[in-house]
Length: 164
Image (spheres, helix red, strand yellow):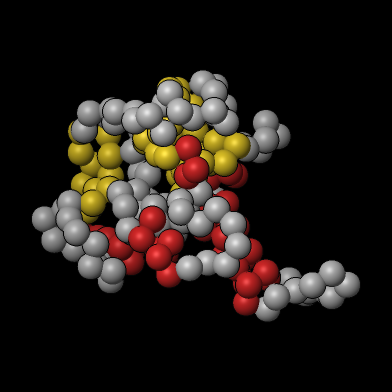
């Protein structure tokens, strides 16, 4: 399986495509065959060393694909489900807490620029059949940024208007 990593130092010229084994699936994990990824400014910042992420490191924070294997304790996904990644894996609801940021895909933990990824069941979201993998792969960071801005930063409430 191919992965896109930054290794042997930071910089865009240090990005390589490497062969790695398909990841093992743990009890609480889901194996996904990746069909599409999207590139974010964050991914470039990680490659350039802005976060000091330990190397070697698989890049990428946003991906979409199909579930090919499910861990024994995962009940809300099945083989064949279409999914996209959830950028901050530990942030399931409510206020964003600093401790959640350690679980950011592609920064705090290895990313998703790979042919297969194994992630916790809470790190994935089902996508509708009406959405392409390419479209779904653009949602994780963009959707979370919009949510954080509207719900937590400006705290929009029912009856208020928002110009986008």
